[in-house]
Every structure is written in structure tokens, then in C-alpha cells.
Amino acid sequence: MDAERIRDNLERVKARIAGAACRSGRPAESVRLVAVTKRNPPEWIRPLVACGARDLGENYPQELWAKAESLADLGGAVRWHLIGHLQSNKVKKTLPMVAMIHAVDSLKLLRILDDAAGSMDGAPPVCLQVNTSGEPSKHGWDPEGILADAEAIAACRSIPVAGLMTMAALGTTAETARGSFVALRELRDRLRRRTGLPLDELSMGMSNDFETAIEEGATLVRVGSALFEGAEP
Image (cartoon, rainbow, N blue to C red; front, top):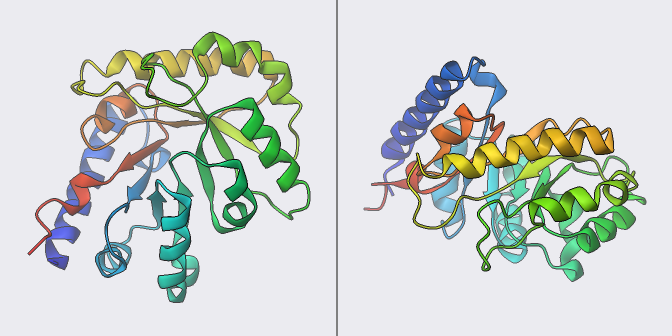
């Protein structure tokens, strides 16, 4: 593992984030990088954290649990994000371990999280996943469905609903992905009016399209391969 390459990759990604934020008329600090560490061993993650990455994203609860245990000595230097699908039977163990859950993909799951959060002191915020690309393989509300659930979403008071999340369609380029990001931002504005929730967070954009996502309002970008590219010996 090439720690220097990881450092260089992180600095390049940060510079690209800053540039995209500037183009959207925002400071770089308005966009948070979630470093996606899935399938990368803890010994690869330590140098990333040492270089300044703090928000780490995992797709699978079990992998998040294992890595949180392996890297427990890093303490408050790491904030874990679950960015993939969360099964209801893994809610109670996962919720106290994370800084944010990005992919709450149904009203049923949101209500389960709301019930679990009721017994917590300071539950982590969540983003609601919307399938803006219309792909059958993707989880999440369809755009009209989440608007229809606005009243029920607003009734969940124990779990903080911070915003919305999406993924562009498979095979899209940075530019052809733009429509999905525009759709999420516009949907957020409509849902904000219906629920009265601030919904400040837009979790969208990955390694191949995060600059476009930032230009369209992303506040959280989930970047993995661009950080580890070329680091394998």
C-alpha cells in the first residue's frame, strides 16, 4: 500500500471539490467529502485518516461494524457513514455507531429508525434515498412517491431527517448524470415546502461525477476509487 499515493489522491480530490464548489458560488467548506472505504482493509484506511479524512463511508452494516472495531483506537478522528442499504434487523446495532445514514429507502425503514431513535440521546441524521434515475435495480422512493409520503415523513420526530440522497444511473458520464442531480435538488425544494423540514443535505456524486453533483448543489459527496487509485503495490 502506497501511503504517499493516497495522500496525493486525497489532495487532488479536495482540490476538485473546491473548484466545483467555487463554480457553484459556494465555499469548499460547504461540501463534505465522505471517503468510501468499502472493500479496503483497515491498514489502507489508517493513512487516509492520517492525511485528514474524517468521514468514512461503508456500504454494508457488517463491514462497518468490523472496521469500526478494528479502528476503534482512532476514536473521534473517524465519523462513520452508512451509505448503502440498511436492513431493519440491523438498525439497533448500527444507529449508535454512525454519524449519518445516507440511504433510508422507504417509509417503513424511516419509521423503524424513528422508533429506535426515541430511546437515544442524540440520534444521527439520515438522508432519504430517491431513485431519480428510474432504474429498477436501485432502492429508494420514486419522486412522486416521496412527495405523497411528505406528511408521514414530517411526523417522524425522533430521527433527524437531514436531506435527500441519490445515485446517477449506471453507465452515465459526469455530464449525463447531471439530470439526476438537478432532479434531486428540485425534489428537495418541493419536499421542503410540504414538510417544513430544512433538508439542508444533498448526498449525491461519486468518483466519476462528484464535480457535476457539487455544481448542482451536493453538500455530501461519496468518493472511493479516486482516493485509492494507484495505491495498490
